[in-house]
Image (cartoon, rainbow, N blue to C red; front, top):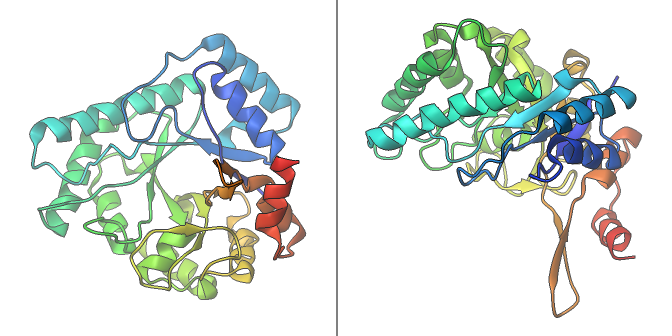
Length: 304
């Protein structure tokens, strides 16, 4: 069965219930969310009754809890320890996110490993290893999925070898997995038109059993650009056919695929509006047919 979904919201008033309802409205059977704004520390108290209601809703719609993903906030940067206070904040905040995931029953958290800033690559990788060795406990059920990055600025993990070094350096490495991001991989220099070759390399370097989820995104830039600018499915340099081949690859059949593509904008001359593309992109993916009128269809649907 194809596991396809998107990023959805998580609001304080309805929490996971709202996330599930939004995902279902797009035709999803998996999804990803932040437990709070990705750029700040504000987090609502989790409501047990809402969590229970969400689990019942998932069961009624044949969506498995194991296919739901949390994305850790961008403010976590484990690769830089120039300021001890900031480094400690990132470590402690990630611990809190793991606890929140456990309370929600979510088994996977996607994590941007971070940027070394004024340090160097080796120091950045070692900082991530040291942080994860402090964060991860032997008995935790939540897995951390290190995301493949585009290599923008001083980001680490734009090469598989970086991720391999981290996994090898972490004591409880069984708690680590990998999130493949198609835009990031493309921008980092991996050819998504030769995805079978990429998976072969991934298996040799890291191991296929470590793939925890896939972020399915097109890219606004050419290969090896190191830009990290997502594009709607089929409207970028990765291309619709290549993305369809990735999504339907048998070796990833049991891996959740999550869309993080841009909202579509519209303006009436007075006010700018944005609309989620996911319902229509998921329809394209299920039909395996590119819609070259996608952006207008999205606008017409939400403005009718």
